[in-house]
Image (cartoon, rainbow, N blue to C red):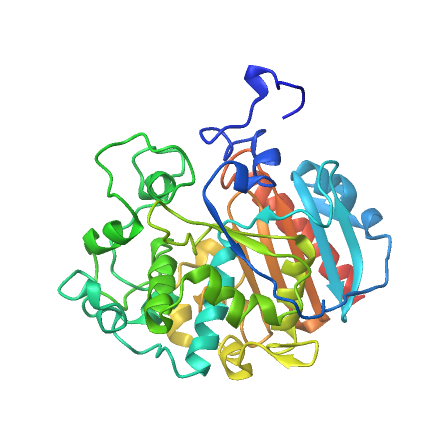
Length: 392
């Protein structure tokens, strides 16, 4: 978006901003392209991140039979920004031209893990019960296909809800239609539900609740709906009060909302890189940061063991080479007992918690497509190289 006016073919619009190369500008200017609500940081002190810079850009990354420098791997994977916190100190931080530490960036589905933390806080306050049935938490869904589904089923992506987001290239898939309903992009289809509330209420099932894991973004939105009903508070204000204003965030965050004000909790939160890293440090420290307990330690502790049922319900093809992998409480668990788990978002977003090396890696990217396997492999190789280096 350079020039006054920008050339027609290079303009970033509500129709093209999710696709490369337009997303490199779009993910940093979401409030100009979609309807957003402010998530206030509050007026408390910033949780400082001490700096201990190291030249990680030169470490070797092995991928596809060759070796690259980390700096080259980051460039090849369209990494906009990365922050590595090791033993409480920022050891590596890098931004592409056009992004600086004050900029908020779209997190895509990393938003799910932030929403899961909010649910954990409300559970700790006695406001929500993971075992509660969805229609009991959201009376508007009584008599719907959500009968028999619990909040824990939503947290673990084990509901029987029919929702197809396997192919982000298919314009008729639910993963694409949600972009129109939730306000990510211009609405084109007049036959879609008026808002996310209506869509959730009309969804049907194609399997039993409590069955195998199937990734369905809409389930996180139902969790957000339950949280707002339980507290009588709009999601942006609730998220600010319970979480964002308490982690020592440096900047306000934002979230995309639809025409009815429904929050895109599954993929619409925008934060700065350092604030995302702060959230990760809080997780690494059992829910505490800057002397304040934000998320209950026992809620985070739920992630730190191997759950045979969740592992058995998981598709091992999704996290190859990790025999103890599963999905739990809105996180991708690499190995719970080892204390390694990650949040992922399409187009290359990640927040990794790695307790063995006391490391948090926050990464923001703009892959040209949603989930290109080659870029996934390259990004994973870069992450492993950093962890191996820091572990000595």
